[in-house]
Amino acid sequence: MPWMIPNIAKNLTGSPATRKYPFEKRPYFPGTRGRLEVDFLTCGYCGLCERVCPAQAIKKIGDKKDPDVTILYKPFACIYCARCVEVCKFGSVKIFEEHTAPADRKLTLGREGEPVDEEFVLNNGF
Ligand code: SF4
Ligand code: SF4
View 1 (tube, helix red, strand yellow):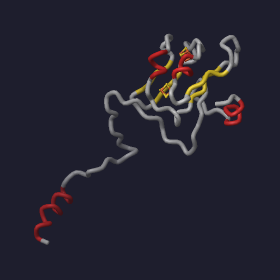
View 2 (view 1 turned 90 degrees about the horizontal axis):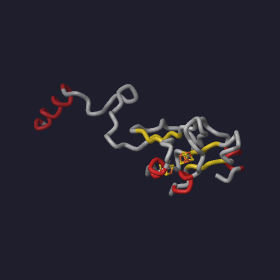
View 3 (view 1 turned 90 degrees about the vertical axis):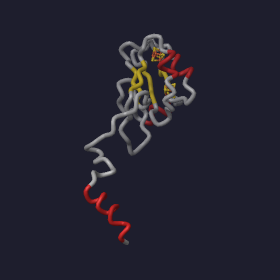
View 4 (view 1 turned 45 degrees about the vertical axis):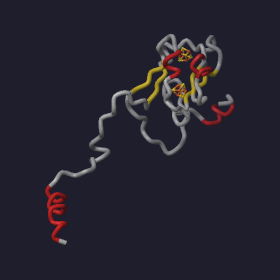
């Protein structure tokens, strides 16, 4: 028992070993790949990102002349390989050094990052 005293004293007087998450967040490591965004204003809707995506996590819906053309993205399928970022000649896909917030279901996001109706997603074979 006496051999535990230094440890007890250290635990009582030392700073906590854990962070007060979510109030205190750990900074992300450089090079973290965890959030992806498509800038639909600069996107040329060429569909190249869809063709190279190994996880089928991004898809162009419709023709680029169509006013309803959109990009759908599945953050829960994405493996953050950044292949889409590399091939996009318009620089429209960006990957950020942060993580997306947790969600209670596997959302599919539309071109403005808004959750898309799952029926629409299924009807478009995504
Ligand atoms: S590769 Fe770039 S320009 Fe082409 S559809 Fe994807 S985001 Fe849009
Ligand atoms: S980062 Fe990789 S897995 Fe995610 S959408 Fe782009 S190409 Fe697909």
